Image (cartoon, rainbow, N blue to C red; front, side):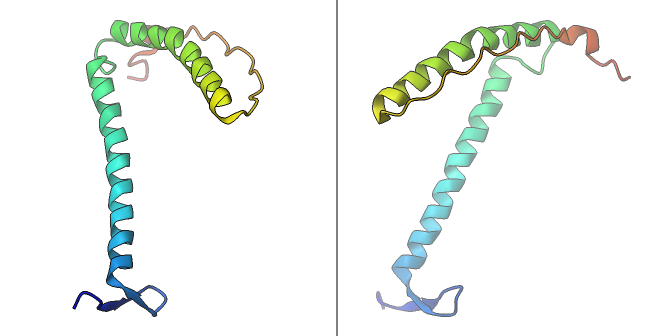
Length: 107
């Protein structure tokens, strides 16, 4: 019973263990993607990004200050671990877009 075979997509017989592993890989990817999506929803809720526009503006300014140094540190870590040379990218442009002025502007 343990060595039973099932038909694969190509019509050939495949051992049940292969069928189980394919299902496990698919469910693992679903769990990883679901965890990332859940973390993003939690972050939006925790930082109150969908709340008042002044809090959203403050969160965007905070992200603008924190993300570039974090990306630089991560790229340095990758270079150190892999030995690859990542070219230095130009500084991102400063964007000063007042959300409060355009909030519900289409109504």
